[in-house]
Image (tube, rainbow, N blue to C red):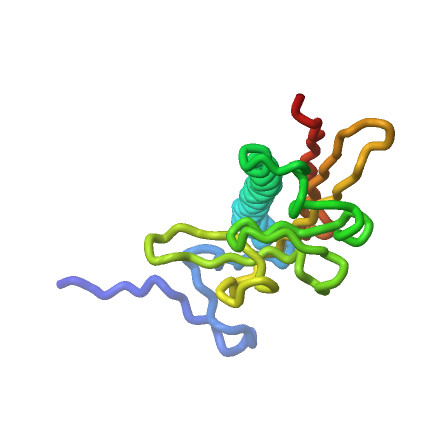
Length: 201
């Protein structure tokens, strides 16, 4: 006949101790230092990729803004060059008439609205150098100024101004286009394009 065997021993009531497990020692938990180290390692493992993604996003946004700023500066230069060439083809005595001049642009500073085909003084219209945009039905984005057209209701971070200077002693003009926008990390970025216009012979 089989006999039931117990693997636990009961302690005697005389010794005053609780029953003891005879299979071995009990297993302990993590210490506080181990928990702190584990949390620290987990934070680094999760935070490093997030930080890298944030930096990459910032660099991508800055690159995109710089490309747009370069386009806006080049657009203003080409617009004024085309306006001058048009005056020459039309036989105008002054190829720069109705374009820019230091006397009509408040010390030489103007703004160019290519979409509206206008050139105006920048010092008399408040924040008119702020570039806005609108998207047409075909998904093409047009840049302009809300000051000259109420259809441009979406402001951009870019400001575009034109500095026009008559060079003394020569029949030439210097045009400087500046496009500025706030940096993602603080401060102001600037893109400048300069061209010299000499009279046709």
